[in-house]
Image (cartoon, rainbow over all chains, first blue to last red; front, top):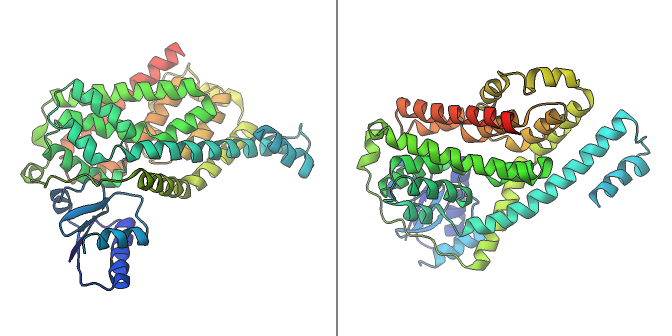
Amino acid sequence: MEIKVLGPGCVSCFKMEELARTAVRELDIEARIEKITDIGQIAMHGILSTPGLMVNGKIKHSGKPLPSLEMVKELIKGEA
Amino acid sequence: MLKQFADYITYALLKLEPTSHLGDALNFFIYDTLKIFLLLTTIVYAVAIIRAYFPPEKTKRMLSHKREYIGNAMAALLGIVTPFCSCSAVPLFIGFVEAGVPLGVTFSFLISSPMVNEIALIMLWGLFGWKIALIYTGTGVVLAIVSGIIIGKLKMEKYVQDYVWEIKAGAGEIVQTTFREKLVYARDYTTELLKRIWPYVVIGIALGGIVHGYIPTDFVVKYAGRDNPLAVLVAVLIGVPLYSNAAGMIPVVQALVGKGMAMGTVLAFMMSVTAISFPEAVILKNVLKMRLIYTFFGIVAIGIVIVGYLFNAIL
């Protein structure tokens, strides 16, 4: 599974990355987590508000407020 | 009911004299704080539910390849309901431009979205009444439409950073959410917002109390009254750097109005606080060349000054 966290480096972008990592760990699944910080790259993925979360190429969340850990797990499980 | 509660705390519980300076100020503070937080919690929650129906992706799609005028009007109106954070201004800008939203239309959105926001509206409504809140919304939307049209007419596409035009984004599918998820979003949105702004609100109301009790009326009338032609200009100059503290500024401004500050000056000040800011300029530098940033800020600032003089003349 491929997970992307997209954000230029704001506080909530780091939190989003943490959430994704924790979710993957707690779900105990194989996933590659990639952090995308380049603003052009972020836009190219179709994310309009940061932070964004993509799972297997699909936008699962974008913008604030951040989803809860439970929600992130749901989003990731939905693609597993 | 809030009034009784504030009276109870100050006069019965703390046994302060209603005629004393401190009693009056504290009563004021408790009443205003309760009122504002009650309004903030309920209305922000309601607005957040509406916002959940207008994610930026949907707005982008609605504005794509719209013609000027109609596009500018739609963008300014959608700016009210689409959630926006200046931290996301860059991906949003690229996404809009890439999707074929004309530059001027994009600017109408970028101006209206931060300016006509629910916090400013609630604070204005709670402290100045619904008429002022409505005037603020109306002029904000008109300003966004007109500024966007002017920027569109100036044909400034060449002052957008070149790489922006080369980006080809994916479709950016809309994340579908159920009503239940929208309620969760609204709850989280409200909690996060209140957590972020409550200190500003409390400090603002306290400062307002101090102004109310201690700053002489002659002083305010002389410098911020309608007879000082420079007041609007100075208010806009002060307002630009005071980014994102609209919630804290309004109670102070309200106290100043009580002392004779003119209403047009107030509106101009509020608009300059919310519409343009230095941090936003720094962020926008990623996608715009300086010339376009200056033009954008210049047009909006001139517009705000005109709004200020206009309402000082008619209100």
